[in-house]
Amino acid sequence: MNLKMFLKEHRQKKPRVFQDACKISCTMKCETRREKQGSQMRAWCHSSCVCPDDSTDINHDAADIFVEEIFREELRRELTLNCPGTSSAQAGRAAACQGCPNQKLCAAGAAATDPAEAAELRERLRGVKHIVVVLSGKGGVGKSTFSALLAHGLAADESKQVALLDIDICGPSIPKMMGLEGEQVHQSGSGWSPVYVEENLGVMSVGFLLSSPDDAVIWRGPKKNGLIKQFLRDVDWGEVDYLIVDTPPGTSDEHLSIVQYLSASNIDGAVIITTPQEVSLQDVRKEINFCHKVKLPIIGVVENMSGFVCPNCKKESQIFPPTTGGAEKMCQNLNVSLLGKVPLDPQIGKSCDKGQSFLSEAPESPATSSYRNIIQRVQEYCDQHHFQEEKII
Image 1 (cartoon, rainbow, N blue to C red):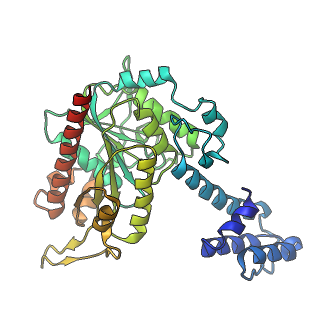
Image 2: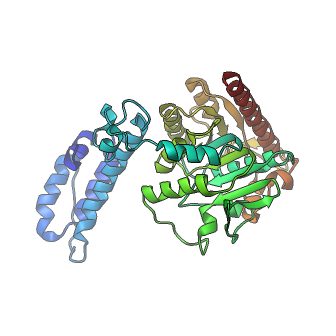
Image 3: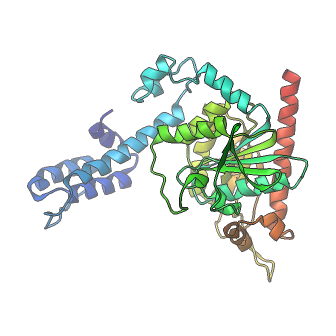
């Protein structure tokens, strides 16, 4: 499918997006191309295109890039959600593989995890009992906050060893939330050493590799994937009861990579974070679809920011109204477990900014009670999953 066909096919599906894109593209064209480009855009969008009176300083290439980026992003999403997986017999041969840049690699079996590499990852992670991946469809729903508090909650049992792996390469917020900003990774003969919050809670993040927390990580997929593999292969995790993996929002390279690399180990499943409003739930449905596609078990869904209880009058208000029934209704429709709902509490944000555990800072908060119930359910799921694995063995 080329760019022109893409715009033509999708103009009815998403008219507002493509009308806006075409208008912006049109207005960025120089005066000598104005008439021709304007007519093309009208044909595609069924809308009028008005070019600026003075376009002598316009970058002629920027318009083409703008529309092409929308095309590539839509194509990438479509390929990702329908990808049969590199280990599938249909890899590189399924209808969804058409147009994917890795089609030939998958068809030849070159994209699958190398057996020697898989064995190396399995050996490095053999001391990890449980692996929980934390996902979200959108950013800003409290995914990293949940990952941090899940790690703190599990580590409250001093007999348990907990590790938190941050693979949000472009937005590593875990060091800040865990009070480890400015720390660095140390290397020994056995590999990279995690940075420890407590004796039984270690953390690894790309944030520890940056010279400044304000540094931008501007990497394409292959380099991100390489670092994720390095975190799993080169970090000396040791004996760990729970490895929590905090991921970026969406269903992109990082998610495909972590699922592929962890397939060599015993991954328990994913916890998906959302907020009550439909704009968040619509992307969570994609996340659930992604999990089904890559055969990643779903532990359950957590609804964050679920109402606000006034500390004075104790009256509850819905800051983000669940207009379509919220996570509860969605979970019922999709046959997925709802692990719990966490109400808003301003102290959560304050604790994260200070790098302290909200669970310890506000033990009497309704949000703390909700978190502890959810953490207990995650533990119970992992224990049951481990028991089932042992029966199979």
